[in-house]
Image (cartoon, helix red, strand yellow):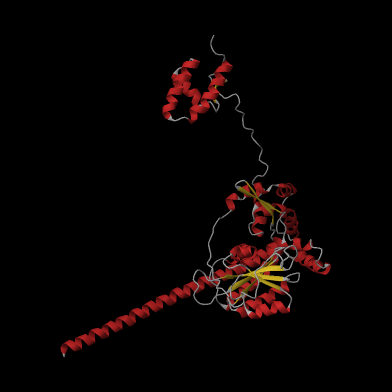
Length: 436
């Protein structure tokens, strides 16, 4: 008695899995055994084994469909209706651009807050159906829809920190006993050099200060790394935070490790600590802001004139409202190792402004002031003002490069003329010597 059809299908299913993965030499032997067992011709047996994991069908002359090969366990893929069509993309792109292109995990929780704000200032208009779709879409869907719009680029900067050795023994390395990172007021500070790729001469530095607990960040452009400008910048920062500064932590650069700043912190009862030498990650919070806030906003060009410093500080005043009121951030809550992988758990994305409003110790008067400011700020207008200043910085930088290039050309021509005249004089002297 021959094999039944169900038995043939079972044999075919098992042999086909091995046949499709086998090398060419083994396939010939497997094909001979399979054809002999099932009574197929060698050509048909090869056809069946090659196509077992997909449906092969033909249309007869009367248009009836006949299935030649098919795995019974193969399920037809369900066609899902597309929910988020092209009508959703323009308003989503506009919100994404206004917020400076955050990832989906940061953008998703903030949509319910930012969409009403933009509608209030008439920056976006959309019908209720599209609005509901945008508010309900997941972070993964946001990333998928915006994938084609993202531009990825990465530039590595240069380190311009020189160690300050004078007070290292007096300024303690930060430990958990001096710092309470579960309350606002303990900040990390650092400098970002705008050298444009060559560190000759003096150039503007951006002084960045970040509160560890809330993420509140302030920036200021200072003339250079001289301690007098850095010290003045820190005092300006202190007046801009919505809570008192309780501690300052810096790297080991001489612009921070100096007597004036040390004595100022002692007089004002501010805990002053420093990171460990050659441990850049000790200042991880402010180092992150150096890129996500400063570099992403003003880039890597060289800025070294008073006009550029003034424009940078005007830009940073807008940037303070933009970053602290409309840029949600996630904080690492827990990190655990599971086998060879590290699992990280983050809290819900919230802006520094929202984190400050959740702190019971912040006075109600301060919270009311922050709320009034928040209600008056149009994030889209902030973005437009910052883009104008960014374009002005680019124009100044391009003009400086053109001027330097022209000066080099003039210098080359002068050097050529000078060398030519020197050569002519040498020839005349030699000729005069030969004649005599």
